[in-house]
Length: 186
Length: 307
Image (spheres, each protein chain N blue to C red):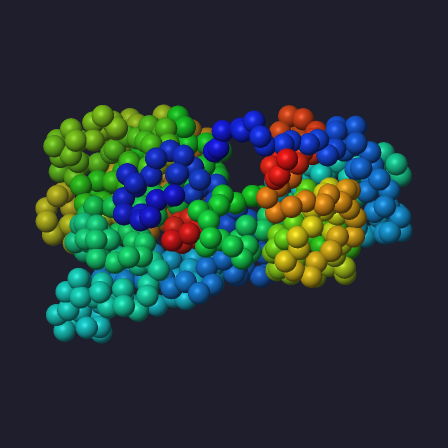
């Protein structure tokens, strides 16, 4: 791990309050675009997609009193870059009890970047069942897509350079809510 | 992650726990309609079996196939080994064919260690002589953890032919690494004093099965190898069975939650009675299913990353 350098810039993109508002908005958009979340399942992609999916479900419940099934979908075994890195530990895959067949699945992740994670998620989903449709919700879209993939719900679009990195922190996994942009040119 | 799995001693507590956690995820995937995963597509796993084995070879084959690896089965019978080819020449042949992993079962203790010096891929020990059988220990540990919820502090009796058992040796190494307390039980001829002394820092030894049962969470019965019966390690099969066989009366001495394990193949009526083997406490069939998950975890962790 490199030691923090003084000349590396860090910018807060979303504060805790911003992040909560963004989650609220996505929850409303999901309700709107899925006619009240009928037949809908939220699947978070580990690590941070899972708490985000739970938060969306909790907000949807608060707004409309609807319980949307939530699960997690680990995509490690479907990655196309396994050979490029050391072996990765697996995350949890837990589908809701009624499964995903014939449902509208909303995949939830923290950052949309190359699109390769989403491609892997689509492959994993295909082996789990046959959803009627699949949508994608992300907290941050930072651009630089390498595949023809787009999100249906975007919390915030952040134009980035490849030298920068987007760090999403969530209370459940990191002890605080925050989105930061670090690195790049000053 | 380690490159080879030659001995249970290759695994420290965190690596062993990572394998068990990975096995749990693999087991969860086994319940799906589509069991196949694309993870090891394009990788080649060679099953190199110099000894007869049904369950271990099939288990490794199923594990590799579920991860989409190409599997080549090589058994010594009917191969160039029967024409006198040495292990080294066979290894070089496999190397030339581009094996990413070689799963080896061999009657000579230490064969996997030698093999690892000759080939570039990973070597997985699937049983070598009377030395070790690490994936059996992993699936046993996984079975205990899924039935009893933990390994740390568990009391485990390993009963039978400890002297010749690679299953016992690998289990002692792995389970003590993970915090379990082992008691080896068997006739003195099969747990001689030098073996007991060598294992003394890790395990207790008892020659009386009845007295240890009330304290055990797990009883693991080892197979009595029929070839040993000619070697006079014990007077007769009946006497062995009377003193060290697990029957219903003995099973009742175990605590309510305790489980009964056996690595298979069983000699029903010898080390274990059919009533015990088929009881709800027996995990023998579960162990077979868990074997595939544990071996998938090992293959993924050895082959899934950057070579």
